[in-house]
Image (cartoon, rainbow, N blue to C red):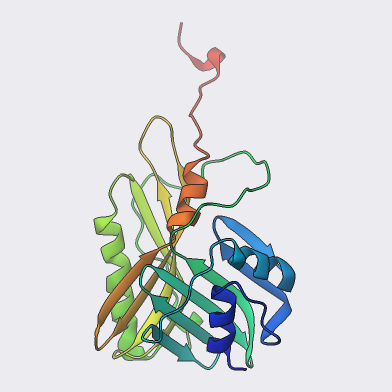
Length: 222
């Protein structure tokens, strides 16, 4: 079974006979699922059938499928899936109790540029690097409702003609009820056009946990 067939079975809520490592990890619906059984159950929470004409992008160690408003990314170990991301809509799954804390990816109050080290993406052709960088910067310009957005390119592969990239965009809101967290965004480009898919379900999960800045009473001038 090839990796794309395994992804199709998982997306539909099925349990593949092979192709999914027992130590695999999935990011989806605002949670991290570990191991074969938990990953299968997570996909079953919102199954969907991948269309035959879905955009498929592959590289020796990576695979991605873009189908409408949903995208799947996978790291490969041979023909086996070792690390997966599911991006798109759906209801966030329950998470463990936690305290939301602020995070500033640059440890400053300034807007930062995208974070991308080209050597980290050997399956991305040199003539496609600028394309990924431009797309990531466009996300920063078009992101509304957040005071700062910093994209981190964590996966990218393909050529200038066709390829895919997975970006973890750190967002920080400027509202009094602050929100700080990462949203995964999938990019794909091909001769038929570009696609951008945001992990809406994952974003909804961290938007549910805002934090309110507080100043100790002893620090307030009397």
